[in-house]
Length: 319
Image (cartoon, rainbow, N blue to C red; front, side, top):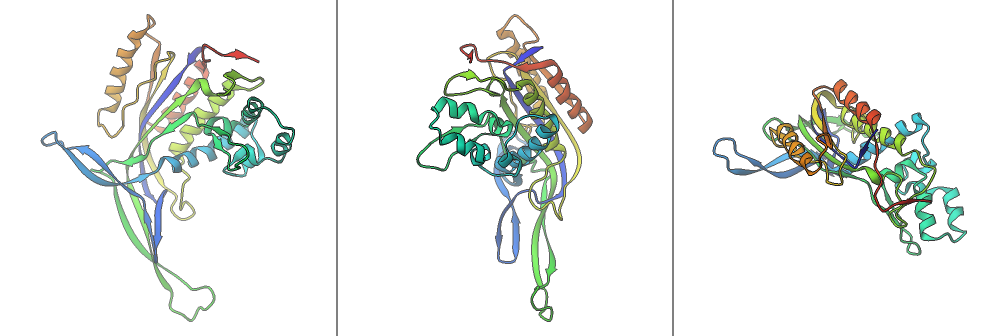
């Protein structure tokens, strides 16, 4: 298998009739999230500022985490009970882990124990206690899932909500936002950090690092194809299609990442991959995997999982 040091993911997905990320409730209205972005003007190559619907990186991380939990459980990977239950502190909230802390373990031992939970390892966590300050940084870097301004639109629709205690009172009007469009998705993953103790700079055994890489890739594909964010009880998105590109680097140099807000993002990412491959004598030191459908996205995820393994940092020693 080839070593994977980093993986970049770029995609455009078409989501219809969703409210995956809401900004706030103002009176009787729930407002979906909009952001300002700078885009090129196709007429004269100038830049313009546009307001578009978007899904925050935090929400996309939440969507990813829920899928990762399910995939990890199906694969039999280690995962803590609080992580399964959606607790924000993940393994730190585990009763067995709290008993472990009572034994006054070293900071290296604490970080080793954190890594036993797949979700904590990949997505990170931070303690809230003042006595012990421990942070596990996520190995995933996620950007905003951003609507393309020329095709993404949002609307506000109204419905009536009855007052439950007194049906004789006239139903209350309520407004809720809905968006449809094509969304740019980007993500970068630091693969050697799977199962890696950042403090001790070791890989504590036993951890199924290969299994966790596989789970990461499958959960990422799930997150794009089934984005289970906010308001899905009544506004489950209609997912029409997806296209994009994985780039896997077997070098310390990062896999290139080009924003899918650019119309030619795949061409540019491929060209950057080709140029950066010249860093080494191996032309396959960076490889790309293109997809144009949801099925091809899944095929690409499994192809990477079957042909690459998590690389290790050169200075590490196994305990």
